[in-house]
Length: 571
Image 1: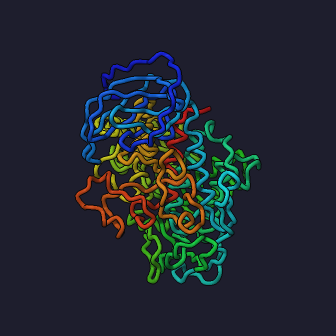
Image 2: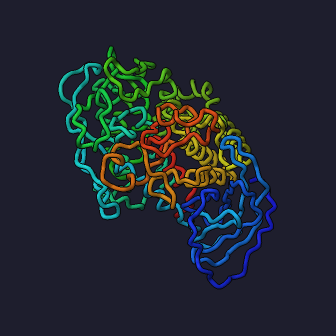
Image 3: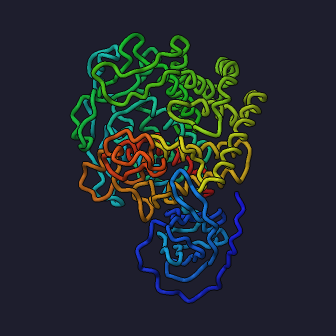
């Protein structure tokens, strides 16, 4: 990390002063959840009044640390002049706040070894709140956060090549809408399965208070299975996979059980009716599930593997059948003109699970053309899963040595550049100006995931520290001093574009949801009210109508879940 001389002075224990009752200022930005004991701890100060000194106090008001603010740094992406307050020498667990003379005090935060456990719980449990086809109740912890069973009427759409009823219940509502999409479920479910596979000691015993809790399977896998079962139902007898299950148009802002529109299985509209990207995603995800669930439910694991191999066979015959919304359908398209990266991901996961020669051979014949996808900009996304293919192959101990070495080399080179760029950023994050797109907060989280995977391939504490810097941004250390996760931190965003949050009677939104974040594209009428000359990191509104900045989505929460597990260091 960059060197800053700060004259940090550990103060002797003082009698507790009365706690500061003044309202916190957004000019001091902290991770509102907190910091790990031994990790770097930095707050950011951005004010018209330049500060010189800062003090960290306990929640009861006692001085615990004094220090000097770093010289101001211009952050062009936000337009802020930022001063860093480094209090890394403070390692004692507790509740604290930071104050700067002439500017004010920060929101409270914690320091501790399990400081992110609550954040992980809420982010992962948010998927239970997104369940389709079943009554949901978050229980006494969140009274009133519930809905009845929804979307029980389903049918084949004319574009699917079949007719008649087909409810295929289950799965997760994709985002602020009630659609279910195989392509977006692919990277979401794959990322969550990787979270378990890479960090099982940290997450396997966390109780998520689900209907299935206590059945002998870790709750993270119980929740993931709700979506896996729906995905399996989207596979046709020939092995191909339909693209999505949605109504023809989005419903109004109503609770899910009040959405009476038919939930259609929607296909491409012409032979073979299924799409290659959806089929490749299912093949990859089910191959992961086959190895992850085997210790807990061997029969289900075998079912997943059969589905994966049938999907692979279909891809042999239909390598690039792409999807566009058929006439009369206006829900999310998730269109992708190139399904070869999904096929590579499927080959890599199947090779890792089965050791099958045909999967290994396909991967080795094609992987080199995708090495440039491991880069210091534009991390993995639903439309670009080549990174996942390369990384899962390199993480497996049984792969080709030359291929593993090439993947590791490029992953380390990209991670080193991300670290270097982050160190020169005013808010110490990995974002470039071009990264402030629809779902920019997921880009922040995916950079964190990329760094943690690189760390698994080649351990480097700077990778983990930089991943933490990205997490700090999401949890409040940003230009708005806003936690981008609902009901997390002292100053979270409150008005997501999320139908249950907007249609129920609860004063706060459903918990654990990650906002899309600043978006220089401004693709909705609410966002277009913002001046086009604003810096990209300021292109954000906490408004329900601002769907281009404040929608939530399952694929955005997934790398947050991964990031929280990966940096936690818990046992």
